Image (tube, rainbow, N blue to C red):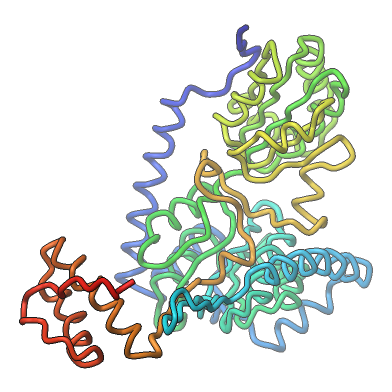
Length: 442
């Protein structure tokens, strides 16, 4: 049994060096935004996007004018995609219920699911206008009931992209800003003279956007670490090399640093996929991007067994995992670290990216080991509450609480319990001592 790499991407050390450079740039840029506010945002937008309007926030009339530029056919497609996303998000929301139970006579415990009160939704769009990202963030926040949704997207070729703006508006954005990159993330999280800060940031982006979210986490909440796109194809000889190569390059075109990995137990498929990738890169219009990603971040892993394929896949914890084998359900049952699974040759990652209804904002950089992707539940906070409705319950719980607090040395805590034992139970507990044990207390 062995695992063989027919092709490897950049060594991890080189990737770490690149990450360090990104961290430094982001840290300096966020400090500038915090210090100079709107002036810094204006300068950064001019520097990186050659865009410096009087106001980054679009007015209602500007939004309406931009939507008029979207063809009826494109608008129908956007509405169809949003209907699929909304249907799945509403089903997910319905699965999250408030609860209230009586754990002991007179002891009531419960929890409520409360929406985050303000969210900044970032929609990438500098290289490709990511219309679908508006559905995934803005619309899902809307289903969750977030009362303030501020959406930001960079200008595309020097101006707002009509289709992206339409998707944001139809998804339920309350504020729309034509602003990209670190400056958008920083302005939404830190706030400026004209942009109120939000409580949470969501959405995918390039390495700089992802790092900005990471550095701002704590000051605001974030959905997850959603950096450059990653894809993995798990395949055996039930599919052909053209299918595998197409699925790998379909995601490699996202950017120059988008990992694409084939994991297989078929040498014939592995070698055939290498050849097919060369053939397709000669005709793919976005080969200028995809070829760089494939050269630097593409990998082909040859395993002896399905168990080895599973181990490799769980270790890599890729954002997108396309499974095309004679045992797709086995992988569904046994995989535990990934962003989203795409099972069987009839579906594909592009379906998930654009239209099928599951969310495409997914964990990258191995974050799938500890979190899933963006979903309606990310916009909800589950808060517990308690009440005691009888004197007997207040006394019983207070007695146990008193003794357990003293066990840990917290005298002040114990007195919170003791005062209730005295008042509601008529038991004279000496100050600073634990409540006595009574056989009647249960």
